[in-house]
Image 1 (spheres, helix red, strand yellow):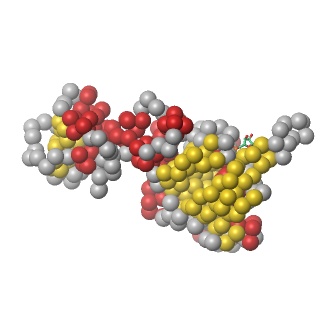
Image 2 (spheres, protein in one colour; image 1 turned 60 degrees about the horizontal axis):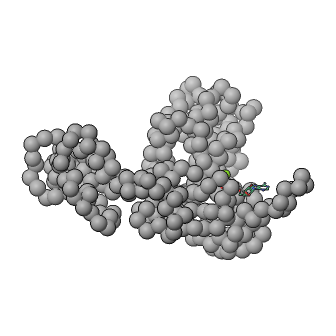
Image 3 (cartoon, helix red, strand yellow; image 1 turned 30 degrees about the vertical axis):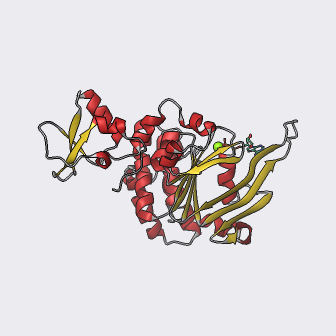
Length: 323
Ligand code: ADP
Ligand code: MG
């Protein structure tokens, strides 16, 4: 769907004497349709530049970027951008337009009818937990930072683009709202089949959302891997350090469902946990309740085996069990 072939980009030396910067250095990467690619890396590693090159907000100076096999420079820039929703942390809502007009900007450009745009705005505001009657006529400055960000993501989704580019879209949100929006994005991805490329510097966000994580350093790809592979087969020490040396094991547990280690045993006296909770949640529960084992439940009330703490600590090579 989107392919980088040996792409490089440098920013020229500034008039004020700043040196030239190689922001992206020989980047090659294939992003398949329907993937949720999360780009992580330290500040200045080239994440935003990489994203902006996809919709030509920045140009590249070497290599090729293809969309569905076509050089992005063979598209009219307007056509390219209409196919790609773009949401950024600093939001970029038009300050003199209402929420409704902000969200409807791309549908309007595409010539949708007024009533269709209005229906779409209603749907999106509801999706992001903003009461349409209250918020559609508000101005951006009348919204909290978190509400502005949600409107920004709603705007990016408005015309149902194939591709969604998001640059730290949840950056300024408090943890509770952030967690709920992350789950909403995951659901949108799973139900819509959209191709999403998202930038974050939050490794936990990347592990939660990505089908594929791209770790950048100094404009170069350090590793491309699934969340679990990044934790279990880090390419080098840089990856280990970036992911967080101390709690890499706990992070691993958060990617594995408890049911993968269930023993096929009859129900025992005592409490139960949902079988689809993560091993991380299960460990927390076992520790908190001082248990050596706990029943698992399939969520519909049926017994789904017994999870033993000992099995969690004795698993040598974690792998994702069949769900
Ligand atoms: P990230 O999003 O990972 O923080 P960026 O892609 O924004 O990184 O930046 C990569 C490098 O390019 C940094 O060294 C940054 O200072 C530089 N850079 C980014 N944008 C510009 C620009 N418009 N002009 C000059 N240098 C830039
Ligand atoms: Mg950035």
